[in-house]
Amino acid sequence: MVFGIFLCLDAFLYVFTLLPLRVFLALFRLFTLPCYGLRDRRLLQPAQVCDILKGVILVMCYFMMHYVDYSMMYHLIRGQSVIKLYIIYNMLEVADRLFSSFGQDILDALYWTATEPKERKRAHIGVIPHFLMAVLYVFLHAILIMVQATTLNVAFNSHNKSLLTIMMSNNFVEIKGSVFKKFEKNNLFQMSNSDIKERFTNYVLLLIVCLRNMEQFSWNPDHLWVLFPDVCMVIASEIAVDIVKHAFITKFNDITADVYSEYRASLAFDLVSSRQKNAYTDYSDSVARRMGFIPLPLAVLLIRVVTSSIKVQGILSYACVILFYFGLISLKVLNSVVLLGKSCQYVRGAKMEEKLFDPPPSSAPGKPSGKSQSKRKPSQEENLSASVTSQPVHQKENIIPLLVTSNSDQFLTTPDGDEKDITQENSELKHRSSKKDLLEIDRFTICGNRID
Image 1 (cartoon, rainbow, N blue to C red):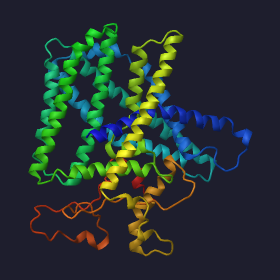
Image 2 (cartoon, rainbow, N blue to C red):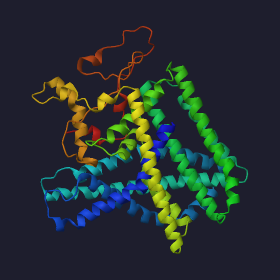
Image 3 (cartoon, one colour):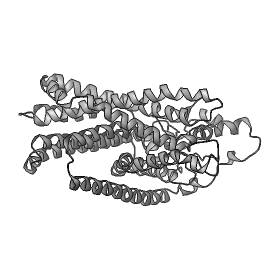
Image 4 (cartoon, one colour):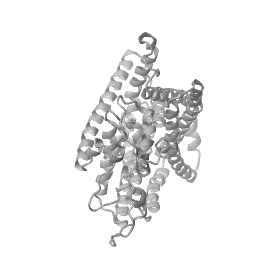
């Protein structure tokens, strides 16, 4: 969980630190292109096109959020009854998961449409509806998260704290809905990723609540200690519920605790493979696909709250903002370096480093048979999304990451062809293993499963 939260933090800080620099470099290349001449057919590299699209979406949604009145929303929600607010908060949680499930699909479709090779110039017009849909999605998702933060703020400011207690008890309802269900190891991996995303989002919501409350009390440090017990109570209840939920799920489904090390190694493999020279995807996008965490709406809301809560006036204030920005960049670089080092350690411990370099046997050039082509289909699908975020200098066959099969657990193997009909012959196993690679579990992407 801690490793996954730092992965989400790395993808979230990327929006505030490296993305503005990449957008600036892409625009600089675009404006200075006549000075160097057009050496190739592309004005910009695919990664630069995606960076500009992300920057434009971020700026447009930020200005659109100015038309949403936070104070009016706060008083409108505060006037509702406790039971009605409890129902609203539950509906918002469900809507947030639904938005996250197809939000990355919308962004992936935009990136692919903007970067795929086009034979006619008229085909570039197809980017416009995808772009408008992406802007609408980020705006609506940001409003949804704002309503969540406002409801949480009302719960913090209520006199008897009854709403906060009810919202915390909602976490224990989650135990009832998941503990007594049958879980395979791959399903538990998806649930773990969802819990990581949910916990990180709650941390950002608590930060927004603290910023809004501190602004109302003129940044009085004493009020922060009034909020501190409630913040700790919410975080402690979330952690306790996750511990109890995962403990009983592993107990009832006869899953060993060692499986979480394999989950961590799978996430580490994503990070290491995206840092290679011939990486076919940006890591922030791979985190979004793996965990359903999309940083753009959350970043839009946080920028909107910070700019409305903190007034910057005078040269000294601007100097503090610049120093804070350099501090964020330092934190991003430090977090990335530590994560990369720990990821290499986890990948080496799981004996997965050879998967980064060794090509699969079916990727040899020549005339492949039908069966080998079926094996290469996931690799071709990932190659389709190659131009989404980066364009490698030397085009190579994309390697499907696979975890090493352990002696005790055989759920990481992937069946091919005739092996799909083979069942487990071990009578001691109570259920059939799911036979799906953890690294191929991807609920939040559409470009990876694009139909030719």
